[in-house]
Length: 107
Image (tube, rainbow, N blue to C red):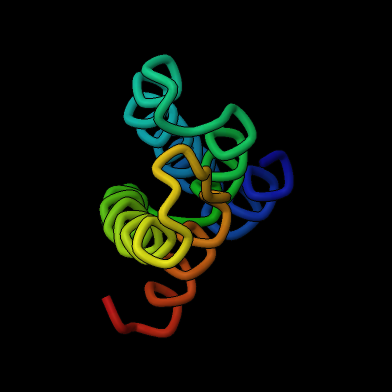
């Protein structure tokens, strides 16, 4: 997260720093309530906050929505194949896929 703030500040000065900081706050604002409802783990929240430091605010919101959709698809697949509703998935995989889609320009 710190590296994202440093790089954003280097590339955009004060405006870059504020943009990265706002992206971090937006990601925390969206994902912390989900964490408190036991929807995702604390590590996932920290991972997305670190990723958010490198992305603009609109991309953060898009990637969060995409991550939840990808996580839902993976969850349905796990439930259908393992027949275990209590099985947990690692949310880092949907985060990675959504950020790669964004960077590649697919979303």
